[in-house]
Image (tube, rainbow, N blue to C red):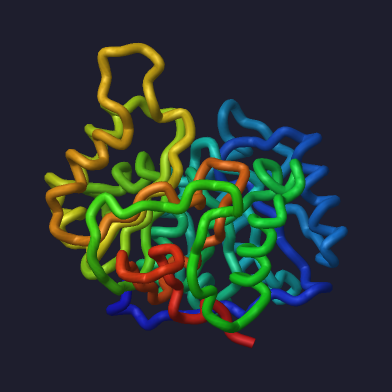
Length: 317
């Protein structure tokens, strides 16, 4: 990505217009509208993309329409930031249809997670744009953001100073190092299934010298094992400067025989000879930090607070 110059979006201000898009699966209408209302209560104006209320099987409209929505939202001078409605499935189908020149020349805050990972990876590597792994309109805002989630979201998107230490919510266990050490690099990554899905394509994730962030939901330990093994066989784990693994919801099997998720992570990541931090809240959990992908960060097991520190601002004034 950083052979292409880094591009930072303008920070968001109250009163800005947020374009809401559905680049993957359709959203629950009640949750979608509750999320819109919540955003309006935070002082934002809202413009809905054309596929936000559409359903085409498991997709929110045709590939052409969903891609056109993304291109139009980036191109429009009226839109200040772009938030995704939800994940699900479908963004991989759009990668060849995006206008990366428009995206690069009209940098804007772009937020989502889960299936949105494919967009983060392709946009970041082809345009240099810093994008945001964070809460979505139907999935999260429709249920109202917790204080912790809003704090990281607003500090990442609405200020132009570095986020600093990423620590877990109060009353939750702190993240722990599976492998201690120190590293620094640009943040990349997202959902493990989507990261693996890019391998062997022109949109393959580049982890060289970067801090690779991984989250997952609802995958049995053997499936996590398989995906991590595939990343290892592709050299992606070895290329990374360090690795951060989220709290992964519903990824431990109820029925033995099985390894626990932590046992799989220690087995697959424990011999990499680079820092690996586990159990940070940034994935499919109610509490989630917003991570600015494409910004410089540090990992260190020698610091008192947390282990991941975002050392560079993600936005400009």
